[in-house]
Length: 91
Image (cartoon, rainbow, N blue to C red; front, side, top):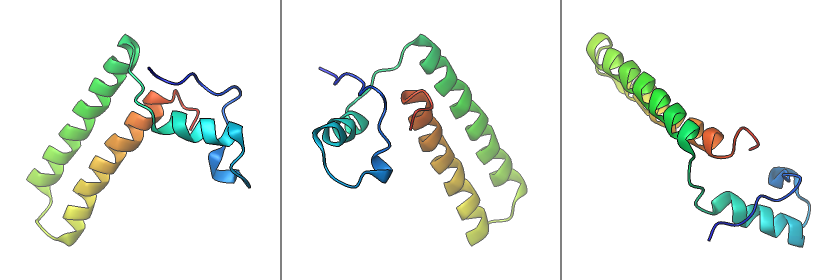
């Protein structure tokens, strides 16, 4: 069962101590959060756009360590976008 959202959302990056509220906020951040229909659609659009970007990079950029980094950054962008979608821009 998912944890309820801490109110208000805590900035765990700036926490000075592991208070009960910070402990709950950390658990929430690592708990599975199912997406609603709008989030699923947003995630699909992001994945499609980033897949297209990687295809263009593979087609148009010569293989080299820098190209590899560019492709890896597209994967990083997907993960970060997914997190933003999951937490609705709060984290």
